[in-house]
Length: 342
Ligand SMILES: *Cc1c(COP(=O)(O)O)cnc(C)c1O
Image 1 (tube, rainbow, N blue to C red):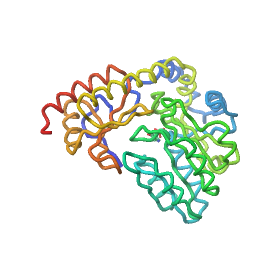
Image 2 (cartoon, rainbow, N blue to C red):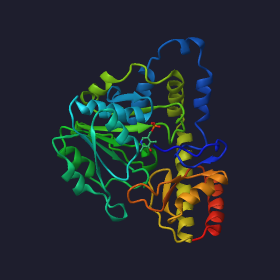
Image 3 (cartoon, rainbow, N blue to C red):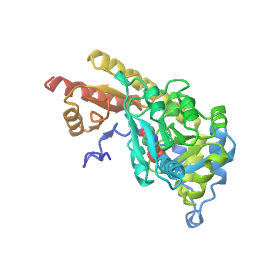
Image 4 (cartoon, rainbow, N blue to C red):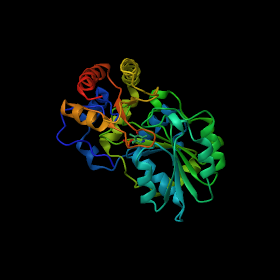
C-alpha cells in the first residue's frame, strides 16, 4: 500500500485526489454546532440517509452509508464471499484496495491486464468470469487513468456473472457526470454502486461513502456492517455538504479548468497524457518518474508516482483541483523537467 513521503505535511497535496480547497464552509459550521449530547449518543442515520438518497435520486432503502467507500468495498467482498472460496476479478490498473478486500475476505484475486494504451479488456474480463467469481470490481472513471468504462460493458459483465456481486466504484462520478445509479441497478440486481464524499466534497478525513443497490442486494452488506460506522461529525458534515451544491459545482468546474491546463502543459512538453473524467490526470513523464516525484516533493509539491502500475510505465498522476494549485504545481514541474537529464 502507498505511503506518502514523510515530513511533507505543509506541502501542496496533489497526490491523493483530495479536494485541496477543503470542504464546504457549511460542513465545518455543522461540525462546530455539535452538542455534548450529540457526541454521547449513538447517531441516528435516518435524516442523513434520506438526504443522501434524495441527492442520488433513489429510495432511502437503496442507500447504505459507509465509513468511507473503503468500508463499502470491504463489505461487498465480505457479502460476496458467501463463506466459500472463490475469487475477486478486476481489470488493471486498479485501485489498490480491491486486492486488500479480497485478502480480508479469504478470496483469491484474478487481475486482467489492460490492452495497449489502456484499451478496455472487456473480452478478457468476460473470459475470466467463472463459477468461482464472487466479486467484480469496476471503476468508472478509472483511477489512475481517468478513463471511462466503455458503454454497455458494465451490464454485459453483470449479465455474464449473475451470481457475483459487481461493484461499480464511482468515486469520481461527480466529475464525470455519469453514473450507473438508475434503471440499470433495478435491471441487474447483482450490481452495487459505490460512492464517496471524500474526493469531490472534500470530506476525506471525516470518512463518508455509500453503497447504492436494490434493497435485496444490499441486505447482506447491511447485516454484516457494524451498526455505527459513521461518526457524528461525518453525519453532520455530510448533511450540510449535500445542501451546498454551489460549492461542489465550483470545485468540479475548477477541476475541469485544471485538467485543461495540465493537458496544455503536457502537450507543450510532448508528454503523453490521457483525457480524464476525474479530478486528476495521468501523464507519462518518462523513466525518471520516481526521481521527478521525489524532486517535486522536495520543492513542496506532492504528486503520485504510478510508474509501477500495469500499463503506467513512466507515469505520474497529478490531482487537478483548484486552478491556483494546478498553476503552482505546473510552474515547479516546468523547472524540474528543465533541469532533469532527459
Ligand atoms: C479514493 C478512492 C476510494 C476511497 O474512498 P474513501 O471514501 O476515502 O474510502 C475508492 N475508490 C477509488 C477509485 C478511489 O480513488
